Length: 204
Image (cartoon, rainbow, N blue to C red):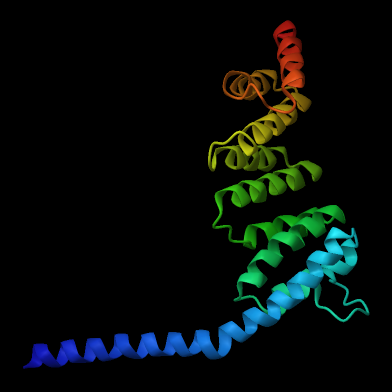
């Protein structure tokens, strides 16, 4: 009898949680998603036009829309709020605010592996700009390895190679370049890869 009461109580709790979640999505989250998406469309339009400050709108310019920063702040629980973190990270990078770019990108959740790769690549670029070579390299390697493909993998190995080359870690640079040479013969900068390898081999 006691066991039966426990089961009934457990089922009741599960039902309450399910109903609560349904009501939350229907009457709170869905309306927010719609509003956030409308704002996102306008922010993307500003970005596509090259109006970076308007797209981000951190300083609350006299425009009728929130911008990516406002969407992140006002609608953090929405999908539009999440993707706005990615766009805000790009805006901060373009404006030269690399630390804020890193912060936004780290807060962005990327379910898509290709987008996740780009996320860590941008973080790597931002760390490169502020001369934090160790973190930059770490993020380039992460970006290259999230999911092996013909586009992002050789691109971020190439960036890792250029970074290590610039700080005269030639063996490390050659390691990344050789990976590209061996597996990605159609990489856009393949000619540069060959030239760097030749230079390093003459140097070592």
